[in-house]
Image (cartoon, rainbow, N blue to C red):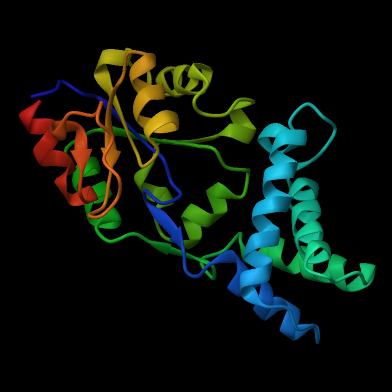
Length: 238
């Protein structure tokens, strides 16, 4: 059995997921402003706008003179522009509203088994922390979704000043947890940013892979979680 003292967790698609695709949420907001845009078109435009913004201003514009709020408002506006909406007053109103909406449980839901697994881990005495490529809204989102109380700390890439897979964000988490790398394990759904990045710092890690998802050949079966509820059994086997 692993002698762990700290468990760190990714959030998006590990503990929480979007209730519906981005394009559908954006299309609903557009309709509220009298604008008709197809959800599929908005999903494509969002991927383009988001990707371009990440390349130009990584990690929500850290060190580049942008707040994370402005970073997201610009992404939302450009998403709608690419889909044919040009009225600046409407763009601003929709972007501000969507930024607020994605800060609440309105657009997020807890993955099956997440609350129960976190409660069990907490009950066994593990220190618990979040390590997520997310902006400062995450604290409030976790509160709204009734998960924040499980964690001793929440470390976002915006707060840390670096994004996974940069080892510095995991090193900060280890300092916050007050443990050595071998005393910690990270749980996440991304092979490079979660599983490999944590192991590169000397931590243990587990990869969440639902049925039907592509398997990573370099990940031993005992490190793969079909669901979060499998975690404690795998920790005991190690």
